[in-house]
Image (cartoon, rainbow, N blue to C red; front, side, top):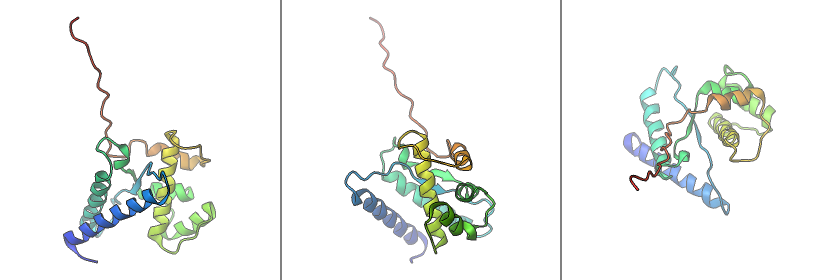
Length: 169
């Protein structure tokens, strides 16, 4: 893996390639909502690197959609919200997430990062469903609480509708 700005450029290319694969995989394939883990304020080391990577991810996603499309602005999920959505408890140890995911959804993961990405995909789907863009989904009360708390947790600002006003006769 390269370092510095070359690492960030490689990340941009890989993200773009993965989005292209997702959209082209199925006829009519569509990305409806994106969720990403927000920064952990308790992180002791690597905050600078996390900030660079997070900004790179956000800018890459933004570049894949028109500037007025809310999909270009991921829902930002705090680490505690991710854990709560999967387990019912925001203080669940990160190492327990794969077990909680297996109990809840029957999917097994060896890689912690992939497990977290799976929960983020579930959250994105739940947020999309809550907006009425997808069919209803059975969520637990604690999952509904997370979705409600995520309302507005994005950097997307809707552009106000312009009204045409007739002046004079």
